Length: 228
Image (cartoon, rainbow, N blue to C red):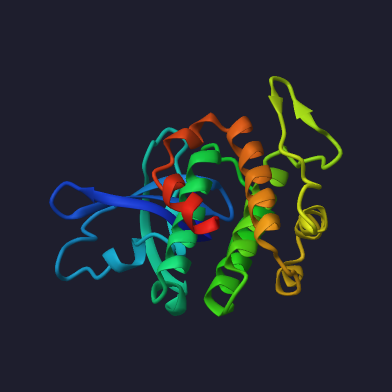
């Protein structure tokens, strides 16, 4: 069965002399791994399409029995030139990919989360500030759409005392607005240093509680410094 779908490349690596294996978040099928034969050959030009963060259109012949689906056609939909020019933007954007790759299950579609990821990347590409807030926006959306939306009145989870979301001067309001999943809310928020710490710690506590795979995140040490 041939499937045509938008996709965002989460990660990729060389395979054999000329091919690439890529893991993508697709609109139609969720997270899927692909093999792109001949992508690294000099005549192909497909290698650029499968760099992390690429927003592409894929056509592939889906077979349930395959671990690696075969791509037959691919093309760019959208690029993010401003993200790649700024270290903080690119670090946060790549961390979003790593977070998504570690938390999504194989072939479990989340179309709303897919569109939220695109909105977040567009905002990263256009915004001049509030980059931390955009990152929190996506983290909270991911928790929600994977079934773990935080309850701000809940002070603990089994085996874990949660950070107090009310500790900062505006921290609860920030969390409430971000959980509305209206990305325009990220433009109006004023963040104090204490709010920054409280919100980061609160969201991180939920993520690490629900997803033990995040202990393997290479970007976490860097992220902690950037979001501080």
